[in-house]
Each structure stands twice: as C-alpha cells, then as structure tokens.
Length: 306
Image 1 (cartoon, rainbow, N blue to C red):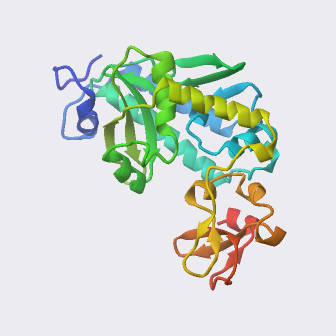
Image 2: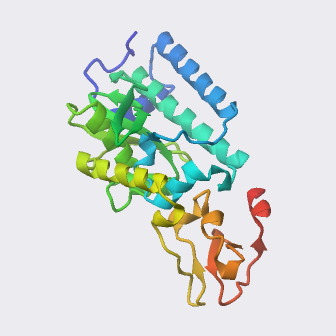
Image 3: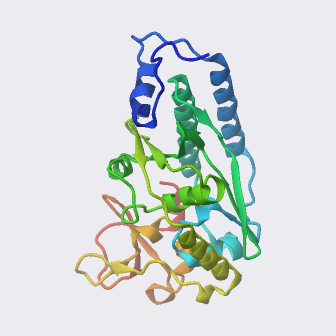
C-alpha cells in the first residue's frame, strides 16, 4: 500500500526529506503493514547474526567485496593465515556494529514508506578471479540508483556529506560499491551512498563515482598475492609517524583501528612491542619512545575494558 502523501514519483535526491516527512507526527501517513513486517523480520535477523557464534576464520579462496578497499596487504595476510593473532572484538564494539546495521535497515524501511522505489535488496554479486571467488551483497537499488547504506560518526558524516572520493574514503567504501556496480549492475549509471549520522540522526544521499573495473581487479589480485605469500612479502600500507616534537613515533590512524596492530608491531620499542598511552583525545600507540609521555600507560587488557 503506497503512502498517503506525495503522489509524484520520488527521486533519490529527496530521500532524507521524505523520510523525515514520514516521521513527522503532524502529517497523515498510512503505514504499509507488509513493509513494516518485512523490516521487522530483517531487524530480527540482525539480532540473530549478532548473537551467533563465529570462529573468525576466513575461508581460503574467498574474498568479500568489503575486502577490496582495505589498503594494507599485510592485514589481509594476517586475516587469512593468522587470524588468532588479531585482537578479539570487545562487546561494545560488536554492539556498535549491531546498531549500525539496525539503523541501515531502518532507513530502507522508511524510504519505502516514503514512496521511494526499492528493489534488489541483499542481491548477491559474485565473480571468479585467479582461482578465488569475490562476492558480496548489495544493500539496495533505490530509485534506479545502486546504493550502499553506511552509518558513520558525526565527523564522518560531515566529511562524506560534501562528497566522497579517493582523498577522504578512509574505509574503502568506493571499492566495495564499485565491485557491485561493475560485476553486478553494469547497466546502472547512478551509484552512491546513503550516510547516517549515528549521533544526531541526520541522513543524506551522496553521489559517488566508483573506481574502474581494471583498478578493482588490480587491487583484488594484489590481495590474493599477499594472502598466498609469506608475511614479509605483504607490505604495510602505512608507516609510523612523528608524534609531536619529542622524537616519539606513533601508529597512524589507518593502523590504530587494526585488530592486528599488536602482532604487526611486536618487534617495536626494542622488542617490547607497542606501548599504549591514554591522552584526552583517546589512546595513542607508540612504536618508538624517545621521551616518556606524561600520561598514563595502559595494558591491552586495561584498554579493552575502557
């Protein structure tokens, strides 16, 4: 059953405005019960996945679409060959992933309530490359636009709202969307992201030009080579950088969120490994300490409990 307002055809450019309209308690809206029921089932599936046991082991020979944009080849090597060396995700991190997924599903439900055309939800895209299988599921096609829905921090939302390209795509979102576009829906000319500000509830659509098919295949082949080879042949994507003027060196942002940072830099600080210091803006991981910081140092166990 269509919504009771807005008889004209919706376009992706008004998605946020239309969703806010549905949520406006002063506006008449006839709820599509089938849509709500389907969304409720999808939300339930999210809870089931979040609370199910997982081994953390990756199946050799299979890559995910979300892998393509991850720049560190050594991280890929660890994920497949030494997954036990990665830090276990904390409960609060898993909860963060869960409510991000719930937000994303909610946006699709409300977009449909608002009269937008949504199809191909969770359609799998898969292709063989060099004996491996690369696959993933799209979020949806909204108003004939291939869409990936991403929840993000307020900082990330502000950054991506103005546009997303190679200069600010810290998490490889464009490569994932590009894979879906080139290998699953090459006839669709419009691609983009729906970003959700997890803190403030803002929503926006951001059009995005994706990397070329040749660029994606090159990245995929580099990952496969790194995974199939020894650790030392898989280069790191980032290098330690100066921290202030003390002579100390710290992990860059790209490494600080990696589950394998401790294992990767186990030889730092003269064999002592990474040292973690808590500053007002958060933890800083030092690979080389020339001058002892005047802030608390914590162990990995203490950091996980914070």
